[in-house]
Length: 320
Ligand SMILES: Cc1cc2nc3c(=O)[nH]c(=O)nc-3n(C[C@H](O)[C@H](O)[C@H](O)COP(=O)(O)OP(=O)(O)OC[C@H]3O[C@@H](n4cnc5c(N)ncnc54)[C@H](O)[C@@H]3O)c2cc1C
Image (cartoon, rainbow, N blue to C red; front, side, top):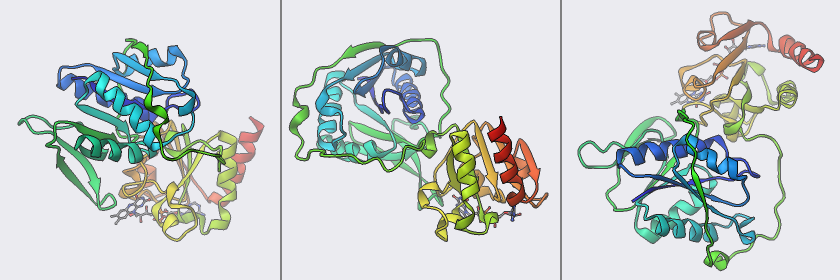
């Protein structure tokens, strides 16, 4: 009864959210005294697959079939389901994202399996139950869900767990799966809207708050983000008034990020904002108010007007 964890393939690379899920799965497997098997789809270097052992996987199933190059929820469900059968897994873990949102419910329906999305803690199993915590009501509350079915599915909230790594490597097995082309839909064309690094995966995030006064002033933040190969983010009120899309809103009710560098510009540092960013390795704050709470959370601070500081920083970065 292994724990099976689905691992995303992003052009041959494995996103952090998947590495965190492998680590999460290995902790669940440890409690259940079983092994962790990772499932990947598509072309990924063998050494990268073996490296999933660093995060706790003992084995990796890789399914590499041309008909799976484009994501299709139905065919991907067939593949995951085949891996569930082969591994005998009772617990299936996904990183919470578009694949967990589309494959997870199908799998759940097939197996009548309880499914908890956006889990923020390891399951509690002390009294024989299986309880998973997640946030609810847009992050205003936590809820504990008891999964009572034999099969259990969990999608792990990205940037919630910091994996501890080892030097272990995983064995890699190529899985041949026959029923992959059963989908009732077919991808005809994909038009990429952006090549920018996804916010939850970015190692640098340039984030703006209400101190920027309006949507028209975001050009200097976008310039900084381009120079640093960073993603842009914002505080909640900025998304609420429509200066930036809600997909960029970080904090208690938005996304959680954990980059190496988080640059907070014109953000006061309210506790609800910090809840989504305080896992960042280094926080730099730029704010006119020396008393702003963001400076307590920041590693480096510049007390100054963003409209003067940011263009100067951009010029300095260009010169580097
Ligand atoms: C239940 C609940 C959930 C919430 N969830 C979230 C969440 O997920 N994320 C989130 O962000 N917020 C959230 N909030 C809102 C949060 O409490 C704050 O109101 C919000 O984070 C403040 O946004 P801000 O820092 O952009 O704006 P403000 O608090 O208005 O701060 C603007 C800052 O800009 C500075 N400033 C002004 N002019 C300049 C300038 N020219 N140069 C530099 N600095 C300047 C000011 O000194 C100030 O510190 C939530 C609130 C509640 C009640």
